[in-house]
Amino acid sequence: MKKKLSLLLAAGMTAGLLAGCGGATSSTATDSAATSTASEATGETTGEATDITMWTYPIGQFGDADTVNSMIAKFQETHPEINVTVEYLDYTNGDDQVTAAIEAGTTPDIVMEGPERLVSNWGAKGKMLGLSDLWTEEATADISAVSESIVSACKGADGKYYEYPLCMTTHTMAINKEMFEEAGALQYINEDGTWTTENFEKALQALKDNGVDTTMIVYCGGQGGDQGTRALVNNLYSGQFTTADHTAYTTDSDANKKALQQLLDWSNAGLISYDAAAQASDELQLFANGTIAMTLCWNASNQAQYASSVTFTPMAVAFPSDDGVPELCGGIWGFGIFDNGDDAKAAAAKEFIKFLCDDPEQGPESVRLTGFFPVRSSFGDVYTGTEDEERMAQFSSFMQYLGDYYPVTAGWAEQRTAWWNMLQQIFTGTSVDEAVATYTTSSNDALAAAAA
Image (cartoon, rainbow, N blue to C red; front, side):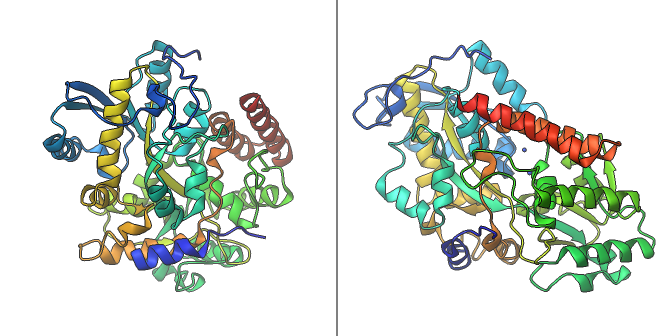
């Protein structure tokens, strides 16, 4: 049976409304209000000048220096004693930069990303500070009202919170609406943007019959945008990526192997293509250019990014599923603090995070700048009355299909490499059974090692 997000999420979004040994000191304090270490600093600043650094992945306009500098200027109106400098990462080299910083003992104070990095990777390795003091009773209730899944995703296996979340979204597909209309393929998609696996195949055939050279690409040149290929595989025949308790990777299930074989069969029949060198950024550019009919890596932020590039109508759609009820991958983004052994910097970092996430004016604005949706019920519909209201409502409608947030499973980083290697193997001659067995064994070995 498919696991669907609580109806609280759909209601909240409707009514309220794609990326060694460390030198840093590791905190040994417990995650409780009683401790006096940096991991549980009070968040109060001393009035003395404190310099902190933030590294951020390209999450909406948080990747734009002018926008971020404007937020820092607002923050310093009330905290002139805290100086914030920012470094901008990308999803090609960002992880390597963080890894190098951990090994060199030069990690930033704040990093902005999701639980798969902040919690299940760096947090699990003891590199992050616990943030329970940010998770007040009021904040926890506010976030829980949207989804308990957000709360659990931000908490490590040790019970400590390593992320303070800001925003979330679902990842969808998108089609070239005009291309589908011309091919008579739009009839296979329901008005709400859902479709079945059977109708997906009919749409592929209609596109090919109408002369579309490349309908879609299974990209497998790296981990960029891999949530798209995972969602496609899992949805085609209602497979699950991990067990419900995130203790094992389950791509070796009959449903998932059937889906992988189906993709290979469609490729051999010329209905879809694959590219062993491409990542999501390459595929998105081909979609924006009108070269391919659909993309596997779409969300509200991507739509805004490519809006000025397209000469057609990009239409967001769910991933096709055998029963027509999709289970979509989600994204959660927020902030974590590296344990650099400096109480003053940790306290200053928390003040900046609280400003970005909790401030009555800046909090909703921070969410809008990401191009996603708030994790706090009290923020309501942050796009009401803006030029993005209608556009964002389209993506809000898919929030009801959010599935399990499995990226918090241990061994996630190793699994991601194994995933695209598996896809390459399948499309270049290795049998599905053999490739899946290799992937599953290596991923679960990494999970066991990480959990040990």
